[in-house]
Every structure is written in structure tokens, then in C-alpha cells.
Length: 637
Image (cartoon, rainbow, N blue to C red):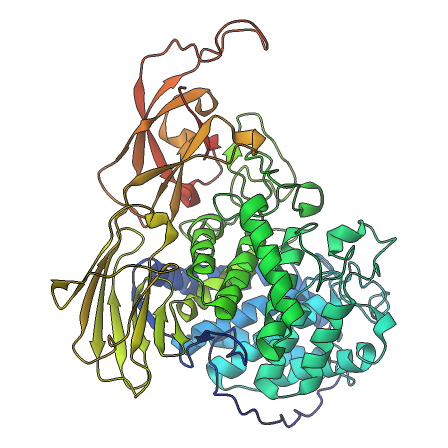
């Protein structure tokens, strides 16, 4: 029978207390704020409220309906239901606990609190006397512990348990879940640290979680195990597993490889851990490899929506420039993982480039993963849906679903939306960076910074400072997103225009955090036509349309015309009246291609029969999968 072990004493840590999901690094050039901002209004606030009112209650109900909680009860004889779901079903429970912890820190809720208390108590009952905690393994399942590191996901589940425990401790000052996670992690240290031949997890995540646990507890064994796992990966441990070594990022050493390959979510979580290794140890190998991998991503393997993974086979990255829109996997979890990797790269470098990618992923592929109401989800996010494209299976993009048998994405979205305010601002050595524009109040060491904006509906951002910041913390960095391009942005201080220029995506005002300062930043958001790199064969002769950070698409629910037959005039894109959560829709002039012709023939492929018309374009994230859709639109010439 399982029994609860006593909560251990944690070693003290000298670093300032963090209340964010990503802790304060030793070696970063930027750091999360000690206290996260408060998001008041705008899109991020809307998402917070939706998450609280709809997504979390729905997700908790799904954990019951799909058997995740019964799996845990079954392990201690509190349920006689058979094991249901994927072998890593426990991780969905842990992700929901993390999300609930962040939400309870924002505001108490009786139902969310009941779930948190009941589930933490359940995990304490399930945990074995030696610290092990996984409902899919053990004497009651017929699966031996640690017998399938390639696909068993025990360490992956532990990683999400650690992240939930860290969130509960930072957000709620509650160390019960942290103690449960620390006991299981200590068992992993005993099992894996001393013996390098003992392997590592087929699904990375444990690495970044262990480093976060070290940040929170001061237990250096956690950092040592994370570093050891990273140094081992690439040894070929998974040869002979169900997938080839590159699927597991196991075909070349993790700290020397220079290109992205294999399962996209696993690769991006692995990269988070590599960045964290540098942020905590200063390991130059780690910094070098993630810089090279980042360049490979943005130069060769990133969809315009921030999606990653171009192959359904293996949920994997493809070759350089292999970015087919209709075959795109672009898993929702990969969008979440990219957002987290990009944030860590910003902490490493201070570069606005990484925040631009994080923002693109957030407002497009991540936002596309959930319905406007908040209780239906997508697993994959293609950039084109055809009339006859069936995909099939529970991961079909033919429409959002209430839940999935492999339900990694919905609780991942829940924990992301629950913590979004943490990414609105960060510390720079001499002050504060504004990293994601949102209506918010930001604490700033003796001052507060009020942000008023409905971004990304518009690019108008008003910044008001109340109170004088402590000495040495007076600079304010304003990010000028790369999507602004050649458009003329403006900045006023106390009503007067400032003649300033952006350097590497930032305008830094050295004396801005002073009581009474009012800054008005205007980022123009006209529709912009994007053209693909000529080596992306699948979208040659097409254009995409972006307004601010938001990609738009043609969707069959908005027109009676056949989406796949449209030829657009890239010179004629206009804004429509009215505005949704992402701003106004757009419209483009188009004609319909002449398709009454042989599959191959001598006639002009651009011949048309229909008269010109105007078709609407909607934000990509609002397309719900119920009709044909295209992001990349063929042009008239």
C-alpha cells in the first residue's frame, strides 16, 4: 500500500524569490520580474477570464470523463476502472494543477480550490514510500518501472509534476505538491545520476523542470541530473526503439548538434532545457548550440504562423524549406513549446527577435489551438484545408474537438493562458523591458507602470509611470516589433514627439521610470503582403497577409466561392469595418481560376472565367476547421 512520506526540508537559496513559471537565472542578461504584472484588459485579459470560467472547469471535467483521475485512484484501490488513455495520462493532471495554481493566485474560486486540494491529496496517497508516482507503472499495472524510457514517459510526467509543484509553491506559498515532486525527483536522482548508462527520457521536459526545481529548492542534485541528461542525449541510447534515433533527438550529441530534426515538441522542450543549462551554469556549449538551432529554425523550418513540424509522420521537422501548408502538423503543443523556448532565448540574449517569434506563435498557432468559447481544441494546425482532405483520427484538423485521447494540448493551453501575464515585462540590468504589449500594471521596484492598450487590435500603447523607481532601475525598454518593417512608428513623451531610433528592436529611454512620465507609442498596423522564400516549393506563387502580428486567411465559411480556386490581387488588400479580438478583418480583391481544363494542358493556368470580386480574410486563429481555408493565397500573376 502506498503511503505519504514526510515533506523534506529544502536548502535555502540566495537568489530573490520568483513567482513566475520560469525562475530568475544566474547568467541571463534579462530576468523575469520577481512579481508578475497584473493584466487588466485587452486580449490577454480576455484569455485569462475565458481560461478561468470555461477552459479550466471543462478540462477538470474531462480528466474525470477520460479516466485520468480514475487511473490514479486505481493505483491505490480507490477505483476498479481499467487504466484508460495514454501511458502519460498523469501529465495532463499535473498540467491542470499547474494552471489552477496560477489562477488561484489571481483570485480564489471554490471549485478550482476543491480540485486542487482533492488532487494534491490524491497524489500524496498514490505516491509510493520511495517517492515513485506514476499510475501507468508498477505492480498494479503489469508494467515494470523504468522499463520503457523511449515511450514510457515516466520522467516526462515527473517533469510536469515538478512544474505543477513549483507553480503551487511560487503562486500559493503551498509546498505540499512541491514536496511530492521533490521526493519523486530525488528517486530519479538515485536511479539515474550515478550511472550514465541508465539512459534518459525519450520525451524531453524533465531537464528544464529539474533546473526549475533546483532554482526553487537549492537542491543541486537536481541541476546535476538535468545537466547529465543533456550531456548523455545523442549517445544512441534509443537505437532499436519504435522510432529512429533522430525522432528522439538521439542521433547526435545534444550539446553540439546544429540542426532541428525529429519530433518537434520533444526538440523544442529539449532546447528549453539547454538554454536553462546555460542560464544557470554559464555553459558556453549550451549557449552556442541553442543560437545555432534558433538560426536553423527561423531560416529553414518555421511556418509563418509560428507553427513547427511539417510532417505527420513522427510529428516531425522536415528538411530545410520543407513547409507544405496543407500537410503542416504544427502541433498546438509545439506552439506552446516554441513560446517557452523563445522566452528563454530572450533571457539569454536580450534580443527582441526572440520575442517577435514568441508573439507570432502566441497570436497565431497557440491561439488557433482553442475555440473562441474556450472548450474545444485543435491538435494540429495546418495552413491550408482542402475540401477533400480527411486527415482522420482523433487529431483531425477538420474541426475543433472537446478533448483527445492524446490530450497533451488542451491542458498545455490552460497552463499557458493561466500564466501569460508573466511574459508582459522583464528586468533588464538598468530597468524594465516591455516584452508583450497588453493592458497591465507592472511593478517596477518602487514604482508601477500602467499600460493602456487594446493590442493587437491596434498599435496604440500608452505607458504611465506612478512613483519613483529605486536608484539604478530607471530605464525602460520598448520593443519595436519586426512586423512594423518600414512603417513609421512614433513615440511621444508627455505629449511631445521624441526623435529616437530603434536599435535591434528596442528603444531604451534611460530616465523614463519617473513619477508622472506618460509615453504614447504608436505602432502602425496596415495590412502587409508577405512572400515566401523561393526555396519553399509548396507555396511558390502565393502571398500571405498579416496585420500587426496576426496572420489572416481565406475561409470557406465567409464566402460561397471555392477557396482553392481563388487568385488574389496582392495590391488590393483593405481593412473591413468592425473589429474582433484581433482587430478588424481584411478583404482582398480576387478572381476564380478556370478549372474546367485537363489536369495538364497547354492553356494558360492563369486563365479565369469569373468576374473580379472581394473576399474577406479573417485572423487565422479564428478559423475553426469547418470549411476549406488557406493562409497562402495564389496570386493573379
